[in-house]
Image: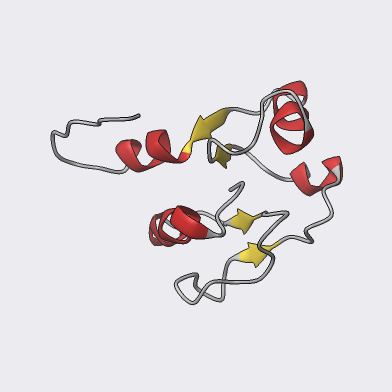
Length: 102
C-alpha cells in the first residue's frame, strides 16, 4: 500500500489483514507505523527502491503518487495491478454505495 501519511492506508491495512492478506506499507514522507495498523503489517524503508515490490501481488495507492515515477511507475512496469485506495475500499464493501470525488 502506497502512501498514507499512513492516513487512509491504516484503515485499508486493517481491512486487508482482516481478510488474511499480508500487508506491506510504504510512505516516503511519513515513515513509521500509525497506531491503527496491526503489528503484523510491514512498513518499508522510506527510501524507495524497486526491490520493495518483491513478493507484492497488488499495489494500492493514494492519488499523491504519480503514475510516471517511483513506486507506481515501477509497479506498472513490473506488470502488477495498481488500484486506488477508494477502489480497494469499494471492493471490500458488501452494500450499495455512492462515491463522490472532487
